[in-house]
Image 1 (tube, rainbow, N blue to C red):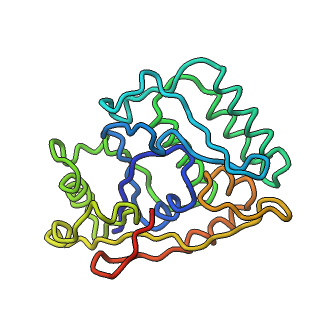
Image 2 (cartoon, rainbow, N blue to C red; image 1 turned 120 degrees about the vertical axis):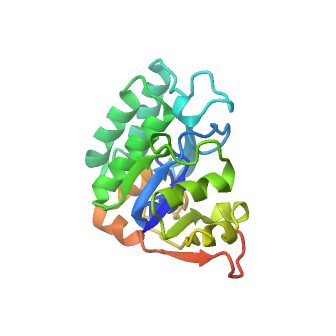
Amino acid sequence: MRIAIMQPYVMPYLGYFQMVAAVDEFILLDDVNFIKKGWINRNRVLLNGEPHSFTIPIQGMSQNKWIKDSMVAEGNDWRVKMLAMLKHAYSDAPHYPEVMPFLERLFGRTGGSIADMAEECIRFVVERLQLPTRILRSSELGLGAGLRAQERIVAIAKGRGATTYINSIGGWDLYEPGPFERENIELRFIRMGDAPYEHWPRQVFVPYLSMIDVLMFCAPERIKGMMSLHTLEPKTSPITHQA
């Protein structure tokens, strides 16, 4: 049984969803501290042919709050601007009619935490691609309470009956195989491969954009094919770190 455990991000990049697709259970680590200037509430889309960053404002943003307790800011100004930007960026994209109604509901809804919004995004993609992965939240599992960092990850993986734990390659320096091996769990790191697709005719491909961009330009069958464009690296293999 393969699992992955990651902080919930709002419409993260393709590599995040490759990890979702590679496991039986994907656990959203929502009961850890919010990270300012991270990717939980930020990402990039393609606007006028260039990468453009967007940020979902957080009410009383603090790194002393858990992600699940970090509430999305009230008010309509940022929501109106966000939706206008997305409409300007993608109204002529081939899958805009299928994807934009979801984004309108997502960014138009008031109340809830950034974890709630991220979970809704991830479930939308899982359903659109018809992935069999189960999505869970760590705060609802009651596993590893009082433990921190790698110890908690091992406890959650063991509690869920995992035989393989898969982590993003960006966490290479955070985990050691020994604690996993003692629980008979394999440790693997997922490395995203090249997965180019066409944005617009004659547009130079821009990688690592939000999944919004992929969904706007690619049919579900095409995106499902991209899910396998990765490698799984054991910690013992020589590797060059990739952010």
